[in-house]
Structure formats: C-alpha cells, structure tokens
Length: 377
Picture (tube, rainbow, N blue to C red):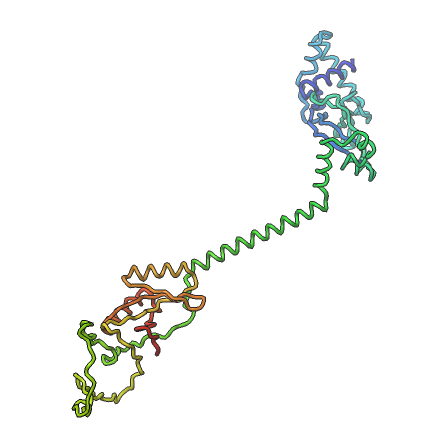
C-alpha cells in the first residue's frame, strides 16, 4: 500500500506540479536552471525539484481521487489507505526518526519541532526528464596541438606533401598569414597613421576656410590727406591752351641787326602780379602738398580703401566700390594687393566730397595719389 501511494504522489507531481499530504503540508515543483559545478566537474541540465510548504495542510483530495480513478480502490478504501500512510509517517517523525518517500525526499523534525524536508534530487521536468549530467574535463593541449589547430598543414607536413596542395589549402594558408599577430599589429599602426593624416588634412581645410572668410586688415597705415582745404592757388584750374591747326604754325623770322626786338625784354601776354599773403598771427598751418594739374583742367586722384592678401576679398571689395558709382583700381604691393577708387575732379570740394562718400564705405580710406604723385603729409 505504501508503494502504491508513493507512486501516486510521484505521478501527481509530474502531471499537476503539486500534491498535498493532509495535516502535514504540500509538495510542489520548483524549476531549476542548468548548473555547472567546477568542483564536481559536472554540468547538470535544467530540472524541476520538489519543495515542501508546511503551511498548506488543507487536503486537496488529489491522492484519494487518483487512487479511486485507478480502479483498484473505492473512495472509502482510498481514504483509509491515505490515513494509514499519514499516521505511519507521523509516528516515525514523532519518534525522532526520519521518513523517506522514495524518489521524492526525506522528512524529519528539527529540534524546535518544525517539520523539515530534503529533496531526493530526481528531475520531475517533462522537457529534460532523463537527461544525465555531463562530466567536465579540462582540455590540455600541447604546443604541437596548438600549431595543428592554427594550421593543419603544420601538424602533418608529409601528408600535405603526399596529397598535394589544392586551392582550398592555399587559401587557408593565406588566411593564416593575414591573421599573424605581428602582421595585424603592423596593419593597425598603418591604419592609425592614415587616420591621423586625415584628421590633420581636415583641420587644415577648416583653417583655410576660416582665413578666407575673415577680411584682411591693412598691413600698414598709409598717410592720410589733411582735413584742411587745399588753398586755391595750389590747384591749377585754369583751362588749357586753345587748339590750333598744325598748318598755321610756322617759326618767326630770325632777328636781324638793328631789329628792335633784339634789345626788347621778353614780355608775356599776362603780367605776373604777386599777391601778398597776410601772415597768420595765431597758428601756422602745416605744409600741404602741391599736386601737378592736368592740361585739360581735370585732376585724377586715387583713393585707397584697403590692402588685402586674398584675391577673394579683393574682388569682393572692388564690387563694393563699383556699386557705389566709382571707378576702381588695384595694384600689387609686395605680397598684398592695394585697391581703391579712381576719381576725376576739378575742384577741391569735389575731392573732399568724394573722399567722404568713400569713407562711409571704408572707414580707413585716404587719398593715396593725385595726378600720378604720391600724397605725403
């Protein structure tokens, strides 16, 4: 009878995962992961082990129902058999002895009268039932075996020679050479060097773009035109000589003895008069440069606006000058390029007005040259 109830309990645990021992507690299955024990040298598959909960003592009727369904017992006979099994188990436990259910585990009472359970270790999982543990043994390789694992041809060179080197063997040997530690280290160094070169090239390109985007500043500060007006007697605004026909021009007759023209002093059509200049008793103005006048009454001035080293900035500022209505000019000065506005004027007021207009666009603009001569302070 005891064997029948034990088999019934094991069957219920396998099928329903739990079964109650009335008045004692409930047996349940708990999943366990795969285990590797280096100390025992074994690897155990996943399993489900039996655990015991002493707080669930209410009879669930599964054992009696399983005995009755087997057809060998009636309900009263099944209940009586279970009661005898539980009474026998209690008597052994109360006497201080342990009680073992074959294939399930061992019950015993602790010194504090608490019922304890130790599982037998059988696997109740349907998925991994019957899988044995695997013994783990360390793999010890000799130097020859390591070389054979890396290159099979090195393990048995005579066999490779006898069988011949086919294309597959040659490809495998080439792969082994490519994965050589020293060669791989050298390839890493080459790749790092190329990466550093690419980084420096990118930094250089960014630096060049930043230089081109920033306008150049004048290398040297050139002298500016004095703010005071140029005296009218320093600027020649008189009209040039009238045009004559070339055929009407002929030399005069040479003077003869007794000719009155020999003793006459040269005269000019326009007498020269000197206009006295009243001295300035308060301040003495700084000397102003004198500029030669053009024969047609027009003066040409070059107003410098900047000195640039980038052709891109030169073109951009020349467009600004021409958009303002001035003629532009450019000339090299060393490794830089001087640019500015070219102006034709008749009076000093026109020059000053044009200079002020240019200085609204370029604050550092100044008169650099008038009628082909450099302006000096």
